[in-house]
Image (tube, rainbow, N blue to C red; front, top):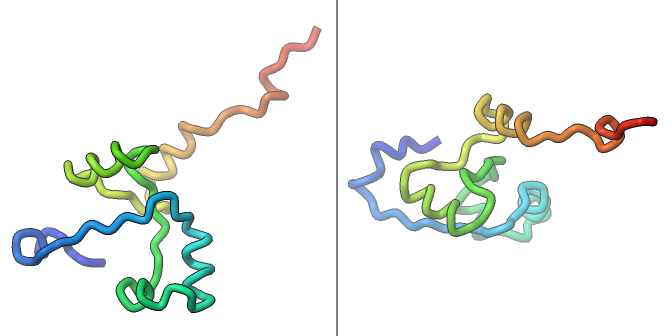
Amino acid sequence: MIDMRRVVGTHDIALITLDTLRFDVATAEMARGRTPNLARLFGAWEERHSPSSFTFAAHMAFFAGFLPTRASSPRASRGARRRRRRPASSTRRTS
């Protein structure tokens, strides 16, 4: 992984976003050889979670320093647990 603390201020940076690109689709297309330019730039995809659920807020969060977290990080899994809902059948009352 690139240490961005060493890059910022010493290099030009371009923010490239691929809005609504799913990780599974991106990896499948790269495996089929359909994204040669991206493969040359990135090598492999990393599954990440955005700091927001919609584009504008996510971009503003990036510029404020809140970067996407790894999908397997403890922070990401805590958020996923918080968002889970009980199945509808367990919340119904029986008379």
